[in-house]
Length: 350
Image (tube, rainbow, N blue to C red):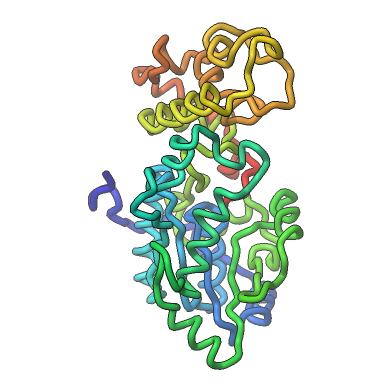
């Protein structure tokens, strides 16, 4: 549970006399965004936090700020969300609107994790797809603005949408893709506009990489406000350092992720047979040094199974329960493997 004590905000020490933006960068952002209707998509990670910092430094205020809650975010992310809410209050900015997908009463699950468990499958990203992000993040934020006529997510359109429609104007969705190679590839695969919204990437206008984003947050808010990477605790794009960190800080959730993977890879959709692999998936997890080379997704890590990784690295015991007494070791391993920009990965969430 996230208590008031955990989210109590104390402004950290900032790096004095270091502006967040140059005058030229301010001009770039203002030229692109002044006079537009702005909807900031906030993921509570490094990039989207830096995006809000940059907008504030340029004197630009979004009309609405949305956060899509999959009910699978890490505890630290939700704490950061609450702390950023306090920052926005001090800035006299709009509050963060938390959006979440609602299910039909007859649906036997209420969130993405439950969806995967009920269907005995992994998140779509484990198979190179992105439907989990579209369904549980993108769509719910669109519906928050545009409204929905029917179904469990029915709601009236947001006043910003109604005003834009009445004036014949378009809302600009601000996305926190940075200027690193991975995010630039992602942004190039996205349309600059669709029938409903225009899309713009302020961090790329600034030329900010992930390291630049960390520096900007540190300058504006203090090093204590640099968040961890925002993603579901069972995200298939998680790197090894993140697994060490999750096992250390949220062992219960790490075990839930292992259970999800076990459920999927031994369930009705499992492709693992003794004919192809020489053993079934459970046998490989429990006894093999490594999985045989295959194009088949072998676990949450796509090319590696989290359960197998946890067993060979002695993160779990024989019953696949986290060795909680080894928290200090787990944190040391996470620190040793993690990049300085706190985002040593290539996932699609921001």
